[in-house]
Length: 139
Image (cartoon, rainbow, N blue to C red):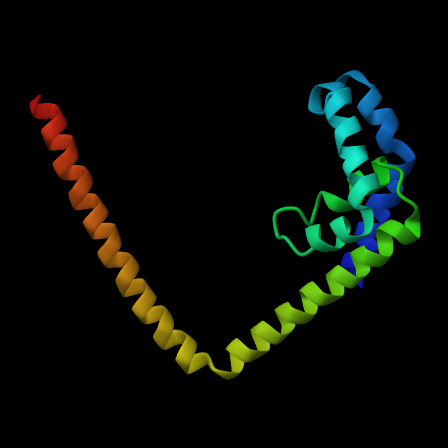
């Protein structure tokens, strides 16, 4: 609920003040008018399902609500897929954490093997780099 509420607040603030901000000198340096027009066109084209899919991607989750507001999408078109994607995201995250928590011994064993493999890989990379540097210095 807190995630959807904060994303909704960001959406409303961006819808109210976002366009004006990007018309100013600082905003134009951050996003040029052609880039902003392209973003708005993509939100109009892919609005509902684009918001849903983007909210499931960790890197893009944070930028979806403000640009939906700047693009002028209506509240239902922006906030319903946002809420559904957030529910799915946090539901899956909760199931994952609960599953990992109930199988902690297996998780620790797997992480022990992963750490060993990563350590061996790091040693191999260091040896490769040392040999490469020595050969470059001899030339």
